[in-house]
Length: 295
Image (cartoon, rainbow, N blue to C red; front, side, top):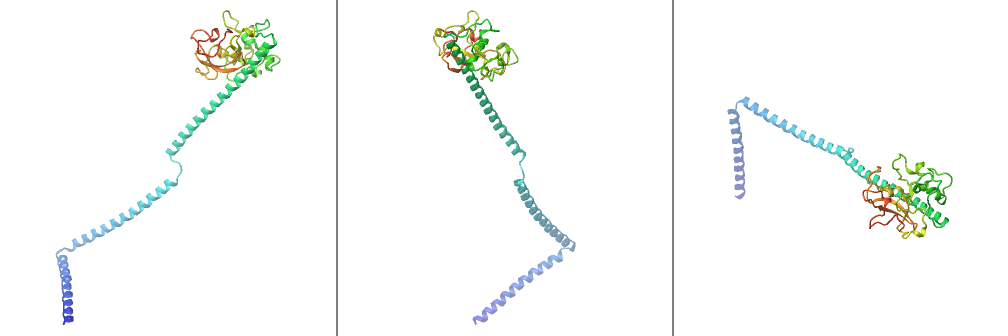
């Protein structure tokens, strides 16, 4: 009884589904009948066009992705860009500037070291002359062809290892940074300055502090009293740390010069300038480590 009932129910369901499908086909057929044929053709053409457009867009999208990927790969593998090149040029320029400045500082230090070494030998030569001549500093000589503060060299050069007529080859009397003053050539290349960069504290002009011809015993402060020095200490200017570049004017206070003292030591020191008179004409005010006068 139950089996017959189930079978009957299934047949009923199938007939119901068939009826629904049949009804749907009938409705569609009715719609087709009501829709003119030319409209159906247009609708089919629109659907086809939409399908083709979608396909084209999909293909275009895939192509764009491939192209973008290729471009990214090419950019990743290509050489420097203009921005990269400019950045590298800027970095190299900065490093080069630092290197050049460091190299220039090294050259400046080397020249100052050479100058102070030469001046130390000249200082010792003057002291050796003094020791060999009754404890007296070089003084005026009738054979001198110029002022004592330049031509003292003729009296002391043999104690510095120089022989024969003075010349530009007397390197111990030459500062590497000597730029002369009124002449176009350095002092150590000029005959009228007896081929020397260093002057003796022996200015013989009236009223000037000087050691010219004095006994060593007259010097009360040998550690402070100048014996020989770069010409710039007379101005003052500086050959090693110049505030005027390669110009020899104006003179200015605290210009640094290499100087040698009566006790034999050498220093790179500031020179006083009052704004009017050359430095060699007077002793400095308090606060400086040198003096010209023997007292």
